[in-house]
Image (spheres, chains in turn orange, cyan):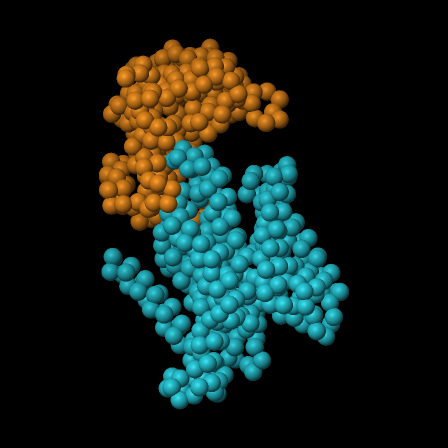
Length: 254
Length: 330
């Protein structure tokens, strides 16, 4: 059975216990394979909550998330890349990425040689083989993000949900990660990431969802979504959006 | 590289085996510090001593250390905090209260002391869990820790009261000795009584040694990987604590093994649960056995085991954390 979308959400609403206002209100969205979708909005707009609703970690009080049945069960179909994980346990990079095999193993099973082979493939694909034996606590921000994405690749899920993947990254690493996400989508994965930086969204997203106070106020192709009017409404700031050689560039207004 | 890894495991296994064997001959009979092995064939009392006292005691020390080491490692990973030890969550103080209660009101019958310690240790865990569910502050881990502190304080107040009520000439020394920990009372029967709970705990933790890695991750990430972090953590926690409560019911409070050994294991065998769990189990057993040998050999009267483990354990802990390559970030 072929589905129109890899992932589809209808009228999602979620309110944290005892919160006055819902964190996500009546959100609709679709995500297809081969597509990069950026969820854009200021801090506290509900982006991370939306991501965890799509993941199934939070149960919505209203609406539903539909996963294309052809992609298999959720844990094998959807990979989640959190922001930098704080851990006091200094796993080696290869051991950490191996955790991506969890959905393919039983509760009390340990990984087998073929699982290790998947890790080797992912390390190679990301060009980070030299990191394999390094403790994760010794990685730079950019390396850490690549390792987290590597763990998602090891999971072999067609849908990738990433929470602020470019946060805290320097310029070089930010574009390295963004280019990687684009190429992962071009290989046929469905990629959705949250960001509060419109420039990151403009660089690689096919579509941008603009979130404000829990609602998706704009869902449009990136070029049409990232406009002066929309960004000024979203961030309450004054920005200029220019097109330079076909690229959207977000600048401060003088 | 592979050979080096295998070699490290062989060294550890051999050390445990040889230490176990040597411990049968270490002691103050016929004269300190050891007994020549040929005495087993010539001296009837020596054979009796080894078979009925030293052998069960060696097994008990290995088992106690293995449980404390493995449960300590598992709990540090389940709570995602390398400073957790198996006695927290109120288990140690609960068991101490149970033991003191039995010493006072059940004429210090060893079996009653053991059962009462185990029951109150588990009751303390249950109480901690109930408190944690009622607390309205912080996440699950923080709530369990806070509830554990409160329950520990509650039972330690209870222990204080029982010590105050105890007959200072007969009952009080016995309570104090139990609180300091020791294996002098171990016979085959007592050892057999703790086997089911401890072996079950060790078995489940050993099987879950890789799963522990997943449970170190944040809840949402672990969930995305198909785990049910809340339920799985709770299951492994209960299994660990039941094993600890059983082991401690026999030995009394033996401090520092469950905190220090996992650090040692991670340091030399890696952070991954596939190696750190078996390493904690074996190192814990060896360390506790070594301490027990010392406790019954150094002086004529026994030095309580808990004093020696705390002494050596805390020193080792400081050395480990102060030396290079430590895994805990500042």
